[in-house]
Image (tube, rainbow, N blue to C red; front, side, top):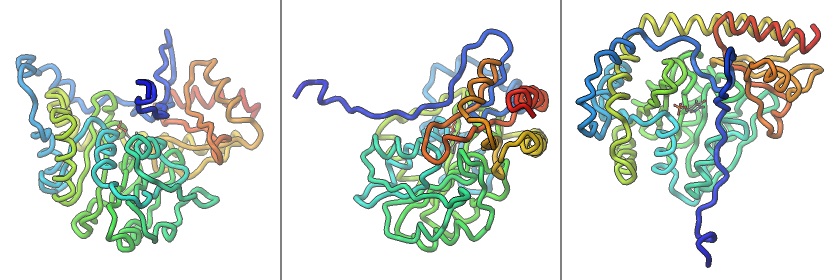
Length: 353
Ligand SMILES: *Cc1c(COP(=O)(O)O)cnc(C)c1O
């Protein structure tokens, strides 16, 4: 066997492009937040003492973990922090999906799930969404190695808002860990966090990358029963103990410390989203109902790839997925009102409306 044959070969996740464009660009392709982080983050950054960086950070990410615990009204032992929720989800996959039974997730969802399953050799089965891209909860009432559901889902943006949705899946799956990926929950409605008190097998994962305007800081977290969290930490300590930098810990606390700014800036994005949905519909787009900071839409005549390329020529970047069932759709992040006005102007030219 050659060394080439011994290499682990994987098909990687492909993130949205970070274009290197000179001059004006409108970047609506990776669901980043259009406004700056809370003002306290700038202040905390100014006051950072570089001498701190001589020392390793806390292995648990304390005191950020304590801040998150206080914010969400749980115990610090019920919180896990990681380098973005991608890191948190990856550790969760490795920790909880460890049987020969298939892990279940929708056929159309965050495209990192099947990549982690493949790289960790976890068997999985894709569960088709319904025709309208909603989830049929009964499809998850069967033996499995675990379940992961993004709510709101990506890239559809659809929010399963019925409070019994997760509870039904949990009560039918007491033998598996169920992961709720709530990357977009702050743009949607109520989190299933309170259910972690009742269901010891529920792990709720959230991120600072979207609603907290901090994709570049790389902070994500999970909340669940302390036994789940303890096992995740044991796996993490077996790979890389010091994941959270001292800078991320300090700035993360600042990003979480301003509830007023958070509420105000998130509500502005939601307001812009609702206006954008109306305007896109007026241009002949079919727009799925969105509980996220993006919309997922298709045009009644124009091909998604053509629209994508025409926008790119204008330095407006949106996301296209060349995948079955959604290859006629575009995912468009909600930017500032000004950015969305530019987008709509270009789209009205492209669609001839
Ligand atoms: C953006 C996103 C994540 C992860 O983002 P991080 O920047 O790693 O926190 C996880 N799940 C979904 C569904 C996402 O859209």
